[in-house]
Structures are given as structure tokens and as C-alpha cells.
Length: 180
Image (cartoon, one colour):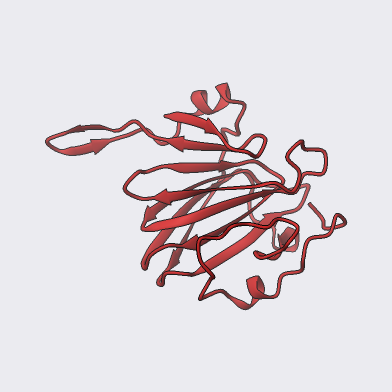
């Protein structure tokens, strides 16, 4: 695995080193020892998957408030998505900064997003599936959402979303009082 730091403190873009032969490919996508050597979470007690049928589907920007903040390891297992993280940690040197990566099932790349960051994605093609490893279990009353188009972040999305649920369409704009 190759780790490249994101513009967000503690976030990393991760590429795998696949080994191919006549059978296909084998690649390690997670190793607790390697993650620990980069100062990253090594325990993921919950895994989730999302499926989006159409290009232009937006999910996010979501996070979970303390004391159950969650780090995420995100990868596309089908299709391509524009994956975004926004730093909502007031004490961070990258507070309110965002960064993004195109996750592509063919590349098998991943985005490690630290606790205290909001996460969202926009599908770049039809039939996208995304696999999430979460460092904390979901606690519904601590689930939070901020606007995907909030000018406080000025995210340069590659296109306007065409599909999103009501929750994401009606998220509040970010304020420093938002429970991060």
C-alpha cells in the first residue's frame, strides 16, 4: 500500500500494489501494522455499503458527533465516485479545508478520513457501490449533516448533483457552533 497525505491533516489517499498473474490480481487493502505506522485507526468495528443506481447521486456531507466520532476508510467496489472530506475540527491546522479523490473500483484506491471530518460523495457513473470501514458504531442521535454546497467550504464538485435524498438536500449550513 502507498499512502499519500491529503490536504487535510490526518487524511490519506491510499493506493494498493496489486500482484497479477494468470489468475488475475491479489492486493492487500488493509494491514493494521501499516496503518498504525502512519498513526491511523486500526480497528473498524462496523462496515457499511452504499449503492447508487444513477450518475450524479450525492451523499453527504455526513459525520458523527463526539463522543462517537468516526474515522472512515472508504473505497469504491463498483463504479467511480468523487469522494470528499471536510475538516470540521476547530483545533486543526486544516479547519474547514476540504480535499477529494476519485475512487475507482478498477484502481482499488481508498480514502482514509479521520474522526472530526465530514464525508460526502458524488457518483461519476451509473451503478456505484461504496464500501466504508468505520471506527465507531452508528449512533443515530449523533448523526450530523452539513450542506454539500456550503460556501464556507467552497467544494469544487465536478458536476451538479441530480439525485439526493431529502435529508442531504435540507442539511443546515455550517456554523462554528455545529456539533463536530
